[in-house]
Image 1 (cartoon, rainbow, N blue to C red):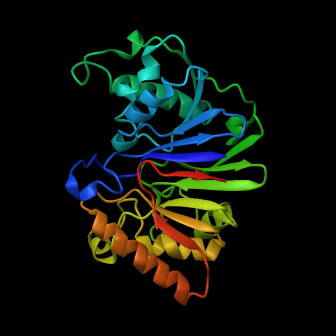
Image 2: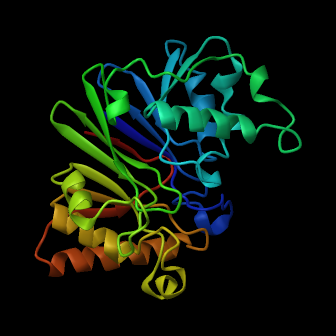
Length: 284
């Protein structure tokens, strides 16, 4: 599978000279199967550039969306997703019937007046809010040799993290998840560790410093030290720090990575650690 980062910032887009290397667009990931099927996880501001890129590939007419949750920074880019305005595209929303109904409502609502000038009903793509996979309702989706399974997030208002498995390789994406505080309905530590167990690549929420967390406990995000701790405990091979705080500069993120690498070394483990960066492409 091929994974590309189109947005890795949390909370709000942060353009500017201090975020050039890691990027300022909010959460959006592209995952492609070895057969070329396209999946998009979340529609933060990064999905605008992804949509423009997809429109340059004439062979791409089918797209699957997986949403982790419906907080604004994960939906804000959808009204600017160019394929949604073209009848050339079939767009399917996966995640189970309840989640699909919610996503349809949230996407349409943010395009209602007075928030946006173009109503959702005017979009020309063929939308499918009934996933064509019979396992989707059981939080597992299988197609084209890819299996996508989900885990509830430990986050206010809930949500899902996703595990993508193809040809024995695994990518786990958990962008908004608090490891040191239990939210109603969220998973326990053991379930989170098991979901990540042995992953080839884990992208995990790493928004806060320890100082931040003294003020933000219960807000739904983890410290970068907690993310490194999870990666070590679960025995993952590579850890990408994700959902960067809007106040975090490129230099700040460099320091966070070095801190996590040192923590991993002291634990006697060999997890490769880096900060997710806009435009980054990884093949598994």
